[in-house]
Length: 278
Image (cartoon, rainbow, N blue to C red; front, side, top):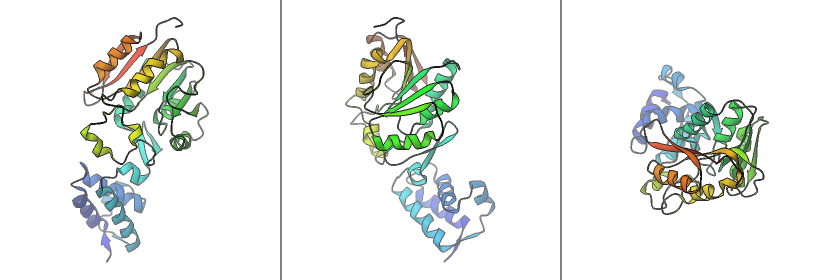
């Protein structure tokens, strides 16, 4: 039995109401994926019927979303900084909160040539976005997962000023950088919110009992990879800003400054190496 777009939209909204904060939007987006149509088009053509083959595909996507699988994995991409990034189950899904790191970087550093390393690059969201915004910069993205790096390379497309390297944090990295930027794992191993993130790779989320294991590793080794006066910029959990700032100060970094995200939560910290060789 063929049904109209409007009926399918309502069915999707009802089905997804207990797993999504935006069930109506999810319904439109999933139907739009199958029909290759925008939400605006679907609204304007609510009375059009959908063929049985497409209905089966739509119901299959509804079923996946009903299990809690994120929309980004179902659709295969996620928007970040006005670009669509390919995502797979090997990659963490880029978050809007991470765009704060982009804002801080672009506001603080001008167009002059810089060397930047993005540690734990994942999809390459930060590395690729910075490379696109600052053609004169040389960007390196690193990740321990080779399958993840393949996705990042795909997302980089034809950009010539971004490269990728396999390794854990500073492993295999040569030379020094003007800026170290990272959105590392920072969720506590016992955090109850992890269940809601069960579809995403645990290695990109978990960071020990206090969620700071990865941040400690990066801070403890950053001096060997920063130019004198270079900067390090992190994303962190909403309740971790004070301990992260303390770690940076204890490691001898200066000009430590915290930032809040769009929800007013502490979300990022920047610091500077002393203006001399260690």
